[in-house]
Amino acid sequence: MMTETLKLDSAQQTTIRSILADETMEMEALRKNAGDQRAGTGGQRGGRGGERGGGRRGSAPPDSTGGGEGRGGSGGQSPEVRAIRDRANKQIEGALNAQQLTTYRQLFEQQQQQRPGDSASRRG
Image (cartoon, rainbow, N blue to C red; front, side, top):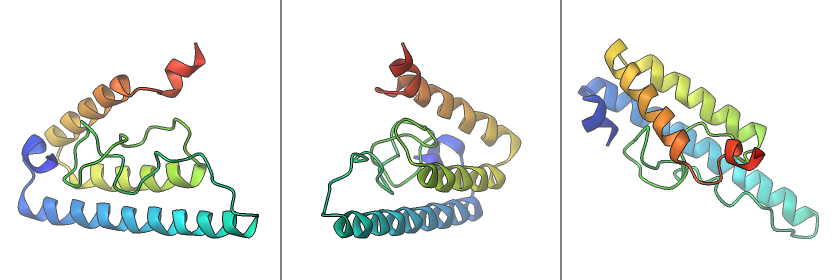
């Protein structure tokens, strides 16, 4: 979806896919470590079900891996998850030209406004 929306060239597609694959691996490692820690404390089940490595790809800013939550939102995320997502987001932004970057950021803002359970809506 990012390819179509942002009109990515083949080099950008390769770069961004690599960034997203790295991000997914980091998220999986983080989740595995968190699961190991929970198992060591009596197997408590934690409440971060929305933090899926590929599960933050909703309507925007779109990437080609599909899934639930949006990029970079901080609603209920651990600092580690935010750091991984922020780093990947900066790398993606670095691979885009000025016009693509503008579109990417607009999509990101639209998505943040549309997210249910967003931290801004919980403050009220």
